[in-house]
Amino acid sequence: MEEFLLEANYHSNETCWKCKGTKLHGNMCVYNFGRDAAWVACRRTHEEYMASVGETVPLTNLPGWHLSFLKADLMHIALLGVCQWALGSCMWQLVLECHWAPRLPRGTWRERAAAQLSRAYFDFVLWCRLRGLQCSHPPFTVCSMSMHQKTSWPYLKGKAANTLTIAKWVLHLSRIRADRAPADMHKQLVATMLWGFVEVFRICGAAGTWLSDAEARALDVAREASLQGYGALAAEAA
Image 1 (spheres, rainbow, N blue to C red):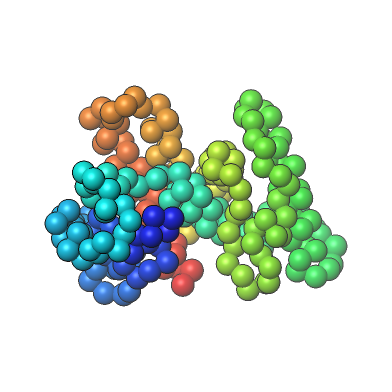
Image 2: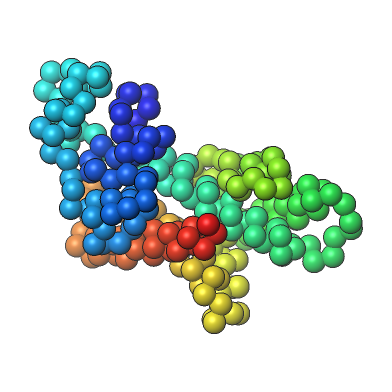
C-alpha cells in the first residue's frame, strides 16, 4: 500500500481502502474484530474512493482501473505482520517464565534471555526434525526478537514461511500449557489465537482456486479464533 502511495495504509489512522475504519478509539475502530463492528457495514464504493482521493494515487490514473482490483496480501498482513507480533509476545513470555531453562546463572536481563533463546532454538530444531519439517530460520536472539531494550515490544523477525513453521511450534507448546491449566484463561486464549492463525494457512494451502462451502465455514471459525484471541490478548497487555 505504501509503494503505490495509497492514502489508506497501516501508518495512517484510516488503514483500509475497502472500508472507513480507523485506528482511533470509537465506533469505527478497526481493532474491533466482532462481526457487528461498525466498519464492517461501511464499505467504500469505487465512486466514493475516486471522489476522496482524486488523482493523488497513481494507480487510479491507469485506464480501466477499479477499486476492486486491490486485494489484501495475507502473507504480509499476517505472517510478516500480526503473527510476528503475536509470536514475539508468546515467546517472550516463555522467556520471562524461564520455560526453557529454569535454573540459569545470574547475569543481565539480556544474558539471561539469550541463554533461554539459545535453548529454545535447540528445542525448535529438534521439534522440526522429528516432524520432517524444513526451516531456515537462524538461531533466536534478543535482537531477532526486537528486544533492544527491556521495555521493547517483542516482535519476531523472520521470513514468511519460517514464521508459519515457528507458529506451529509455539502452538504445540501453548496447547500443552493450556491442557495443563484448563482454568487459566490467558493460556487458553494464547492457544486459541495461535490455532486460528495456523489453521487459516492450513485451509488456504489445501484449498483449490476457490474455497468450498465447508472450507469457507472452517476459515470463518479460524478467523474468529485468531482475531478475537489476538484482540483479547492485546487488550490484556495494554
